[in-house]
Length: 81
Image 1: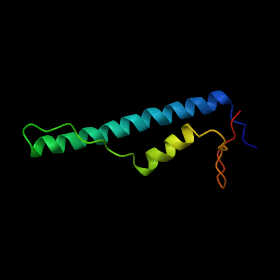
Image 2: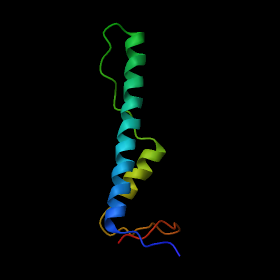
Image 3: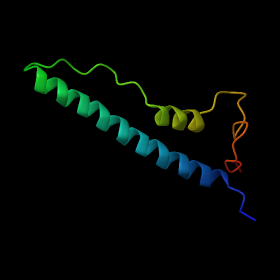
Image 4: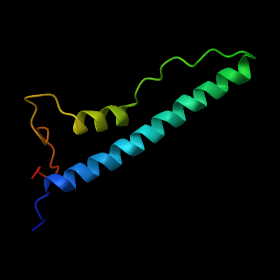
């Protein structure tokens, strides 16, 4: 039988996910800016890059809205401690 996840386990996993999400998103923003700089000598700052599907899922899981349950219906994520 799997161990019940504690609040600190959940916080540690969430922190790792958010760190990787930030790294991934910044890389996509920088890549977009590089393309603009190649096309234009004085490239304007890149427009905001929308979150991809994975990034949205991570944020929704990391910061559920008040009243939302964890895990979402139909999923078997570990329960919070």
